[in-house]
Length: 219
Ligand SMILES: O=C(O)CCC(=O)C(=O)O
Ligand SMILES: [Fe+2]
Image (cartoon, rainbow, N blue to C red):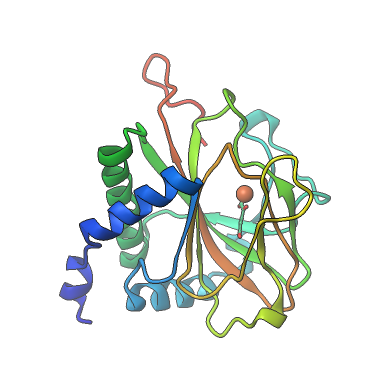
């Protein structure tokens, strides 16, 4: 695909309808071909070219309450900053998805924030919720996996749970190009440790809880 064709690529109404239906019926959705393959390949290369020191140890909680907690998660992250065409393209497509979901589901999604994540072999993120009702503006979580040639034996699955259930109802292998969307307040989930370096872009669509023009919370 040429650069122009890449920039012009748009998902179809049918895809947006499908995603909206899945979110209404199940609260989550797994898509293997949402993004154009050349964009995925470039993002997968770019995240591997980032230096270790560009990533920081992930924390839990927000702002002043942010704490590192290595019992909960050991991955490292780097917020997207639109510094490459591919990041810009990815953010454009996610913002378009925001608009289309708002159009279909009146979700009132206001913006989208996202970071790269790197799980080294053995890294994990224990069972957690991305958002607690009434305490956050994160409504819809997204994870895009950037792992060419990932095998089931490599581990690193995302486990999805229903609340109060001990057994996951879904195990997602972090295959290259796979996009997972789920309602942030509804599904506890967990990242199992893997045998190989595992890369992804995680993001959250947020509603605007701002007071006096300050977006709350800022990140
Ligand atoms: O990488 C994944 O599969 C999920 C990551 C996650 O749950 C998070 O960053 O909140
Ligand atoms: Fe999460």
